[in-house]
Length: 358
Image (cartoon, rainbow, N blue to C red; front, side):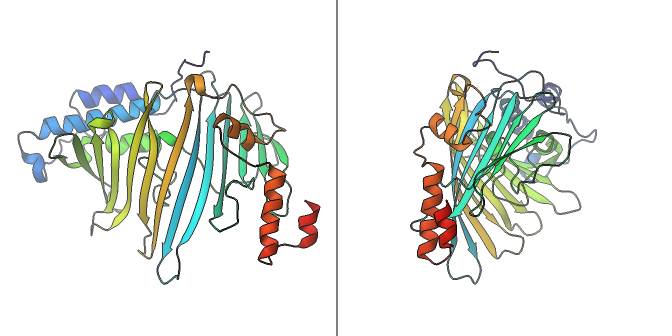
């Protein structure tokens, strides 16, 4: 398989069948006709719904037909504001997701690494205290885990998938970066943005409450109501002509009172003939309304011919492997660890013997 070749990311959803049903004007999920509400009772209602459905299908097909091998480096700046707390908490997080080409439904290898640190003066945000997962999908599959802490030097543990012991759990599961326009930094949305979840809502015309055009007809906004008898939500998705009709604004609210859950804005760039998320900004609110999270994530992509030639060596510092690919100015791990201990010694939080031992 060449670098330029693409592999469809398989899913339980039959994308082609859904697209045919949607574009032919039939509901994929219900035999009952939709009930007109709001502005959808007008004569233009069918064509507007059809356009919204087409744009949703376009997004799902772009996701399904994403290049087989890619790498994405994401840098996020997050501010958490808690009611009655004196100062907001700022956190910097870097995350790397890389996938190697493969056959059939499985990539030859996958890598996910992330690290986050409170933003404080004198504290490096490129430290190697990350949680790493490198999976080689041979038979049997092997998972290499690198978890470094202040008291534990970086080391690699090897696990055979399906055999004991089980690898340690990570507190952050990863999802495809292409879908960040729909979910980011929200407990409500985390883990839900699968293709099945997306299709069940945004390809179901029965859930469309209304469709609206912007004044210049460069943007189309569709409002979806979902959640059933549990907690009904309204999700407003704005598709933009200037970005190949991809979603540029997604807004989640409670249907009961219109309270904001999350709003996500996305700008795109065109790279190797494909539109990719470039900057994703989100504001989300906790269920109690007492905590608000503002975040901005910048994405740097390597796809097709630019993607990694292969998985990083299992004995290597995997983060530095990708620092070279993305041309990041990353420090050597031992230098970073020493910098960390030097800083903690200054504030009285590190043991001198432990620092010297590094």
